Image (cartoon, rainbow, N blue to C red; front, side, top):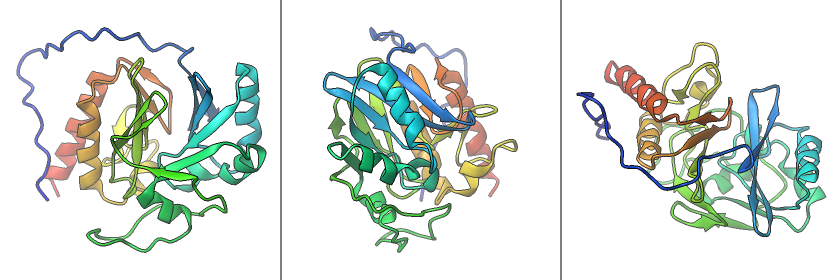
Length: 251
């Protein structure tokens, strides 16, 4: 596989102005456990979209946050099938029997507990896949829309990982493609203070390609599965990608 090429860093980069609202705390609600694992409640006209469910035992906190917003959770969207993202899915599905559950078709296989590699995939998946009793009501792929969210295929951390871009304010819910805990890192490079996403990444070369792909969407805010939401994080994303590419070049 050809390694991704980075843009030469010669002189300032002038980006065209985008007439989009600046992301604010009103555009989404971050729900966090221990400040390390996140879920997000995104407001839509028909209610709330929940992105990821955090670790087991997080359902009460998520439901309380939704109650504070005064809106129902109408759908649960999963970036991928690792246990720290689907851990409370069964409890939430039981509490919200009418809510949709969406995940990519590839990670739906992992959600079922089947870690068999599919045709064309190399190596083996990494990290914890406890599976869930809850089955998705439907699957989604990159390029599809879920309310105001555009799904972006971002394989690498897992084979079927998805990120979601809010087309209203360009907040990027990036799952584990990037993390912002103790600095902005891609999962293709180990953060010495929080290396878990790196060690749970299936294919680091493909992961780096997905990080580069997300950068091309010019997000106004980076909302990861781990760490705080970063406003105007483009330079930090550039730095994280460049450092990951340096590590990859040495292998």
